View 1 (cartoon, rainbow, N blue to C red):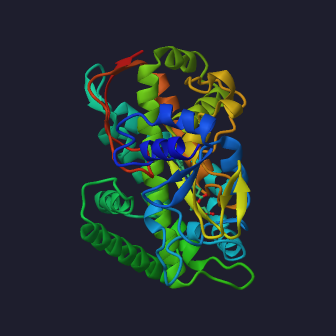
View 2: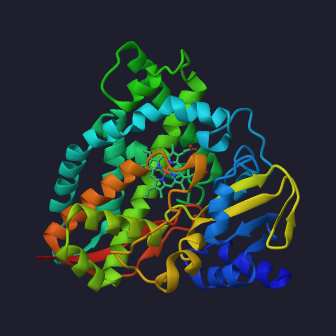
Length: 398
Ligand code: HEM
């Protein structure tokens, strides 16, 4: 399997892969080289659903503390840049501290305001003429929700967009220095906001995180900054691309849009959201590092080996999704996709992301009978986030 696997591996994790179509090479990797070497980085790619799931659930063997992106291989941090970069027991402490901000009660309370924001955003879209759904809907909508959640004034939203883009390698054309400067600005802004909320707590997530205590413990300033930065980034780029990619998928599969419009009940909308998540897989991969020697499919991975959990590949795996794995089906059931990861790091914002996607899809299905491609879709070059820079669609009213 060595050379074939290695050649294919470069096709699925090389520059500009997402602009091309990595799916055929991923299908061959799953079939022929489920543990494949990625020569440029020394990492190994896990492409099968069962392997990605098993590794995600075994942080003692596949740890996050040595980086979660290919760019981080060999990088030493003085302190973890995000909670994603931690392992139990530290990670368990972070989850306990930040969980109150994402409790079901908190997310449920957002349902009505998010639905109202979604209806307003969809009502503002022009009908019957080309509109870039990335710029007009997919970018501003999640950004506003996160800004609402954090309690940030409307005037500051545009900065949020720049900041969150700067944090994702390849999401924009900025130089590393520019991106680092923007990240510094973002951290400063969020910490100032946290200091303000400690003095004058309000009903928002910054106040909650700035003052939360579990067993007498609080997040210190570095931890708070780390977490707020992560919220801003994790909640924006991902939801944005699920939304943009989902609308493109519906434009390309009009029968599935018809099916969704015919049944807009909460369970049908929820199932459609799961399929959009599987189909778009906004986070293409995250990395782990082996803490001990393991053998997988006959390949020996010594301790210290970086391993790619390829969510995009896992989400198209015929072994998990059957013979229709390569079809976009809004009523797919069951749908055990790994778009939110699995195991202890399972996406903390999953309920919120699902809520946002349901609200927007529901509002769009109420207003528009047909979504039509209206120009070339431009993909972002980031390997981590399956991004869309532009997606012109014509939306035809019911
Ligand atoms: C469609 C939208 C989203 C997708 C596809 C997504 C995907 C993911 C994935 C794959 C992970 C796993 C990381 C790992 O295993 O290393 C993750 C973790 C995380 N996500 Fe999301 N995410 C989304 C939306 C959000 C939102 C809206 C928020 C918050 C507002 C959020 C906050 C987080 C946080 C804090 C973590 C780290 C959890 C931990 O390390 O324990 N995500 N996300």
